[in-house]
Amino acid sequence: MPKNFPLHGRGFHPFADLIGLEFSLHEKAHSQCVLKVDKKLMNPHNVLHGGVMYSMADTGMGAALYSLLEEDELCATVEIKISYFKPVRHGILTCDT
Image (tube, rainbow, N blue to C red; front, side, top):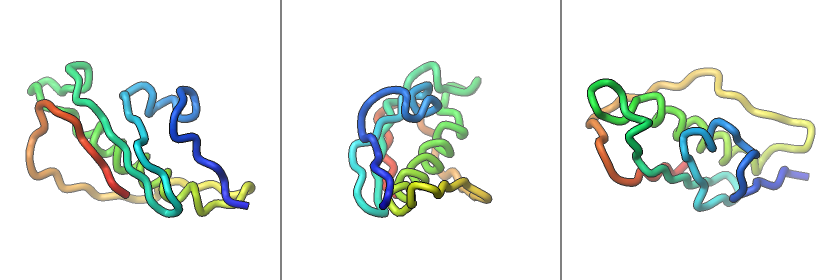
């Protein structure tokens, strides 16, 4: 039986809690997460740290896969590549996976 994904609630994913990442949608093989850009997430150039965007993508992919896993299965990212095109300074980011 596939695992249920807790859409809301702190503690399920402590790192997501740390950066303020929230899930707005979770369906079979699909997830959507959102993050409000905050000063604490900026790099020294006053733009959103690239690791935050990476974390959104990585966590979103994991959530999308989570619905397909059996109780005794888990998933982990082995390799990922991201190309950044534009700096982010403010707003709300959405990641669909």
